[in-house]
Every structure is written in C-alpha cells, then in structure tokens.
Image 1 (spheres, rainbow, N blue to C red):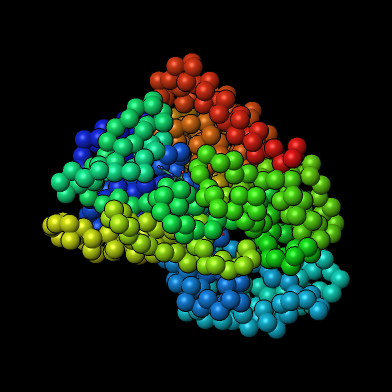
Image 2 (spheres, rainbow, N blue to C red; image 1 turned 45 degrees about the vertical axis):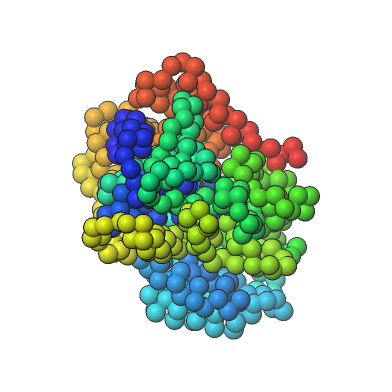
Length: 545
Ligand SMILES: Cc1cc2nc3c(=O)[nH]c(=O)nc-3n(C[C@H](O)[C@H](O)[C@H](O)COP(=O)(O)OP(=O)(O)OC[C@H]3O[C@@H](n4cnc5c(N)ncnc54)[C@H](O)[C@@H]3O)c2cc1C
C-alpha cells in the first residue's frame, strides 16, 4: 500500500475481487471496521468518496477522552467504555495519542463549583480504573494564576487538574487504514458508492464511480456496511435516525491565548456551554460550537457530503466572545483568526429538545435489504464500534454461508503502524524538527528521515513558524495515501489549519510534486491546485457572511 501506484492497485482489486464486506465511508468508523475485519481475516474493501477522514473525522476537538461532562448526564457506562478505549489508544498508538493536562477553573457562584469538579474528576478517574494518564489534583487560585496568568481572575476559586488524551484525528484514521491494508484490506479514496444494489447469487453488487477519472464500475461483496457518519440517512434513504449538529473550531496564535501547554475548560458567557481552549504547538484551538444542522429553515433535510459545511460569522463571534471572556487580556478580534474548521457530529436523534444534549452513543442496525448501518459514537470509541460492527457482520456472514476460521479480535492490543520510537540517528535537523517528526509519525519518521538523508534540501521548513518540512509533502504522496493538494495541505501536513498563509504559498510546489509523482497532465495539476484554493476561500467565507 505504498508508492504512488497504490491507488491503481486498489482500483484493480476492487473490480476484480469478491469481498466478504464492503464498507462505505473512510472516516473513523469505516477505518476502524476495516482494520478490525482485515486483521481477523475477512476479505474487505473500503471506499471513501473524498479523502480519508475528509469529513467529520478531521474536524473534531481531537480529544481522546471519556467525556467528563457526560458524567453530568449520568452516562456512566458510556464514560467507562470511552475511558477503556482511551487507555487502549494511549498504549497501541503512543506516538499519536498523548496525555494532555487539563485545567477546569471554578468561579464563585458559577456552576460547577470546585467541590463538584473534584468529585466529578474523582469519579472520572475511578471509571478509568485509576489509569489516568496523569495525576489529578485540586489547585488553589494562586496556583492557577501562576500556571495560566491570563485566565479571568475575578471570582476565581481554584481549578481542578485532570488528564485526558490528545491526538491528530485525521492521522489516527489514516494509520487505521494503513494497518487494515497491511492485513490485506483494499482501501481507496475518491470512490463514491451508489446507494442501491442488486443480488448476484450470494453476492450483492453495487455501482461505484471513480471521481478521479469518472469511470463507473461494479463491486461485489457478501455484505455492505454503511459507515457514512453524518450522511448515514441520506445514503441509506431509510427513516431518519440522526440529528447532526454543526461544530466549529477556530485557530489563533498561541501567544495570543497563552496556556503554557495546558488545555483549559471554559464556559460561554452567552449560554454557559462548555468549550475547550487547546494548545496545538505554536497555535491555540478554541472550540466548539454546537448548533442544529441544517438549521430551523429546513429541519427535515439530512446532510449530504456536497453541502458547504463551514464556520459562519456567528460561530466565530461566539467563540471569540467565549475566549475573550475567559482570558480578558487576549482581546481577540476576527482578524486574529488564522483558520476555522467545521464538522457535523453524527448524533443519534434521541428526541431531546435542545442541541448539546443529544446522545453520543452509537447504533448498529440491519435493513430489509440486508445492509448493515452504523452511526453515532466518537473518535475515542472508534475501535470498539469497529469491533462490534465486525461481530455483527460475522454473524450475518455465517448465515450467508461464510466458511473458514477467523481470528478473534486483534485490535484491542495490536499496535498502530507508527507505534514505536523513531531513530533519526545522525541526521542534522533544525531544532524542533526531530521532535515534530517523532511525534507525528512515530517509528515511521525513519522513512521521512531517509528522504532528507538522500536530499538535504528536503529538511527545509515549509513555514518559518511551524516544524513541517518539505520531505513530508513527498512522504504524504508516497506513504500516506494523499491524492490531491488538499489532502496534503489540510490533513497530512496541515498548513491549511496552522499556517498564517494557510499553505497557499506552498500549494504550487505541492501540486508540482503530485504531478511529478503521479504523472499528471498540466490540466490535472491545475485542477487540484484550484480545488485547494477554493477550499481555503470557502473556509474564509465567514468573514463576509
Ligand atoms: C466539532 C466536533 C468535535 C468533536 N470532538 C471529538 C473529540 O474531541 N473526541 C471524540 O472522541 N470525538 C469527537 N467528535 C466526534 C467524532 O469526530 C465523530 O464521531 C467521528 O469522527 C465520526 O466518524 P465517522 O466515520 O462516523 O464520520 P465521517 O468522518 O464523517 O466519515 C464518513 C465518511 O463517509 C464518506 N461518504 C459519504 N457518502 C459516501 C459514499 N456514497 N461513498 C463513499 N463514501 C461516502 C464521507 O465522505 C465521509 O468521509 C467530534 C465531532 C465534531 C463534529
């Protein structure tokens, strides 16, 4: 699954082979199913219409957590399960999921009080069976002030410290897919599956279109799994099961909201909702909003992947107001926003009245045609959802005549491909670059280093403020399944999120590399470049709303 020919190989196999499972959707859910199924020995294919993780799974808050606030709703089982998955992820992907310290400040007369926070965190740590990635503790207001000097001090009573996990969501999905491929899965991006099928003996046949060259073809599988996340209803065409909500984050310069490497929990002064201020290298991420989608104008319509899912001016103002209230010296203005990102939560419709309280649990169901559908859940619980779907799928496949012995579930303990230490040896790298490569790619950083060892100019920074280097662009094309400029600059080397130029100044170079590695025509190169520029413009449309 490496080298520039991976996609052609995957396309050939997709058309030529018969599969036990065909998974539609290459976000966290689909990727986890593919990995769990392939490592048990099932023949599996996964098709993603855009880039892997191009929808919700790259737009999350990137927390690997049980969800402290779900304790408030009494969702103890949900929190317990998610905390068990947090532990597994920290163990099987230590390069990608790292412990992160959180401070949750308490203010006089405000919910939650310091006492409640301490109780809540105590319960949270107990539900993790005391496997918290760090030591929780109560801090007095002086300590809090020392650690986060810009935090609002009026009424500050102290803070509760606790630990959760933090990841790169798109990369977590990618490594699941790479592992699935190592175990024999066919995974492909840019292939859209049509939502109808026909029978052919014991197989189902679906039509698909390759969005790269427009070719139409058929795929044969015993069982189809709809893992299209927030697009589950529009894809299935069945009764409405989801009530997606829009979540927006914004990215600002870390110096403008200094938290000295800690994540801080804050509340909106407008509606009291809980948000996070999350350090991300030289930047700070603030989020998230939660509003109904597509809004009161058209409540019955289910989202479709072509919808413009982006931040609106209201969202940005809400987030700025929240952060300015929590950190008064910040005085952030709209012009301070470096980038925004937005995604739809695939929430199950629990019939609850207000957004922000809909269920985070997932559901798996079979329809009259014999398809399996899965929706809901969280990034944190992707693996356990994948395991559950595969258990269900195997039971169905046995009824449909599947023979042979499968391995038991492997994913509980199987390391992800980058798990392990990078050995960058004697390579001379600018300060911060080696750490960045190790933290991003884990043991796979050795392959990035090999590119730099062969051509020292590839060790050059792509942005003076950020640790990304030119070799990563090539690595993304050869080893990280990137096909378009946007795949690289938004999800593999995310300058679109963290660079003040949003990567527009390296887009041309990136397109040239892609053209060289993939043998593109000048027209194809221009098309990919244009698409990237359009995507950046769309993400900035909130400025003119
Ligand atoms: C703002 C926000 C913050 C969040 N924060 C966190 C967090 O901090 N921690 C956490 O654990 N969870 C978090 N979540 C939840 C988590 O991100 C989601 O539960 C998860 O990413 C959903 O993954 P998915 O695969 O189901 O959906 P998606 O990632 O949307 O994947 C579905 C895929 O299906 C593809 N698709 C659709 N139709 C077709 C077709 N016809 N053919 C082929 N492919 C198709 C789409 O292109 C898409 O890529 C957050 C969510 C949001 C929105």
